[in-house]
Length: 231
Image 1 (cartoon, rainbow, N blue to C red):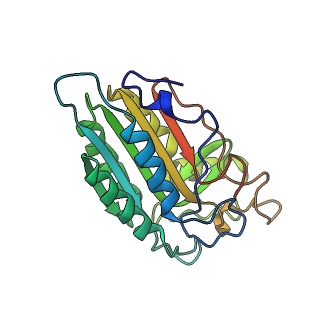
Image 2 (cartoon, helix red, strand yellow):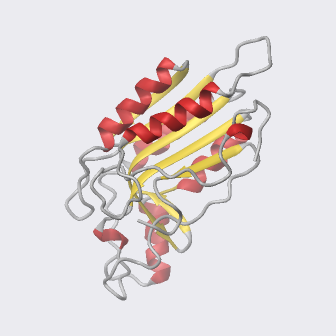
């Protein structure tokens, strides 16, 4: 894939593999913490030199959710990872909106603010560290205090609960694409090991597990904590 600023053209063709936001998931292929994320950000951003003479903004929304209720499971490193990424982005000239431990309404508000600042930007970047799950083929970010309890739900009800209690990652991609930024980067450093990811019918972690593969629009790159379908 490529984009007008040349940033994505320099990206590797294979999906970018990061580590789980908690830093403890034994199933993650790499357990390097936020260092991998920072290397990706440095590599992609430093190669994305704009050919325009007029400076254009670089804008990022960085979310770190860690203080989850017991039913979801608190995370140890999500907020510190988000802080490290936000600091790095600021040093690279990004205007950063940084939020920690946000509810669904607060996340919606942050995305709306981000969309406004991303209009006409050279690069817009969304980074999320926290819990994430896949429901009915769609990826959802789990806000704090979500109230998402799918235990007794059938597949249709579970999907409805996800749409009303969680945050569909595709919404972020759509908002960024509509902003008119030259390049859009989405990094989902999401931990999938949460009890609410269990299939209510089998009481086991839903198969195949992990976040579902996403097809980014032109001019966009989506990176996952692990390969699609893995925790």
